Image (cartoon, rainbow, N blue to C red; front, side, top):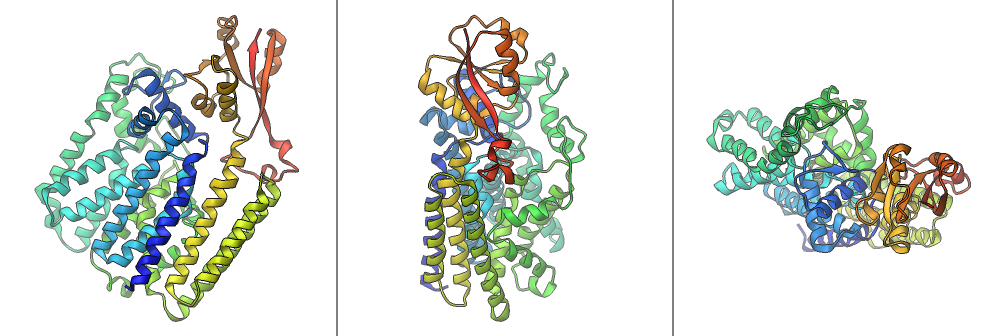
Length: 546
């Protein structure tokens, strides 16, 4: 590989890393990010790292590690959005590092760099830096486990230990199903290459034992919070076992849709989700996958390639067959997608090179045009500056990266991602968050009434208010409970507009401030259009009972 190509890819990775860090200084989005942040906040406030509470009630859904990482960050940096997002951002970079090492060891230095660049610049990774959930952690931990187990095939015993540690961390983020992308690729690789003896080797069975040892902290906390207290009401019933939920209901229950948390599956869901989640590389990815079906294109690859594409294939199939599907699940196999795409990119030549050169250029123009139209209709602050930025970056990408070659495609595609991240983190998301009324109300209350006792009346999804308001808000699920506290002069209640009519009728209320609300993670045309936006906005209030 030419030295200037190495330098180009490293510079692009560095720029994307710096631009992505802009997201650390934005707010926390509802619902999941704000929920997870409020759980970690409660851990710190209560100094209780065993029990998980949401609005004062026992909560059983996700394992603990996501919240432990955020709570540890809060302990060091204080309870704020930056501290919540920083661990996820750093682990995302760690994941890119492991992706580079894995691709470099199986293929070469160039493939490692391009894979890491594609991974870091894919749209859903960029979005997840702002809207932090659990999947970035899972992605890094599964990838680290795959790398160390790959090295353990012929390496030292410590790779087994490290691989098992990271696999256990992935389990303590999401559950035991994460072992499928970790071990699935290896098992199929050994079967396809007829290395059946690998399945019987003691080190792999030791790896399973070590994983069980490393997840003991999670098993202990679930046992203490739930199994020791069958009287607790969870999912509307008593006698709920945290251990059973962890090993069965949260995983197989969701897959078969017979657990306490249900969904609606669509076998094509992740096919169209990948199209936008892996932008600007998705066209190349789908072509690369089709290319892999031809045997002549596989025989030139190292046999270990099977680990990469079978891991992606079985996980993608599992997600597609599941009855519980969410877009961010696809993050877990974006590293494998990045490697598959990087390998295909390097083979482009002649007519196919020209086709994708044109396709990626058209895609860049199309994305810029769409973003400019969105900003014009939305009319957020400084939208003209955002449009100018998009136009300038597009012009610079064409000006500085020329010639019909692979490096041009990679550089221009990376510039699309850089434009997207600046647009989203610098302009669009800050404009959206003005309509996240819980965050706005929590910040306003903290600044204007720092000694107030925050409360929420009969609204189940005020997670951002939970996080941004001082302390741990009190929750009133009916007016009878509110009556017991109505004489507390320091109490300020966060109220949804439908509840205001009765509140005004039965209580002497003082409205301190009103806030506009929209579910900003489910955008609609009417909301984006500034002229029709008032039609779809709801309203929340901060009130004090006199």
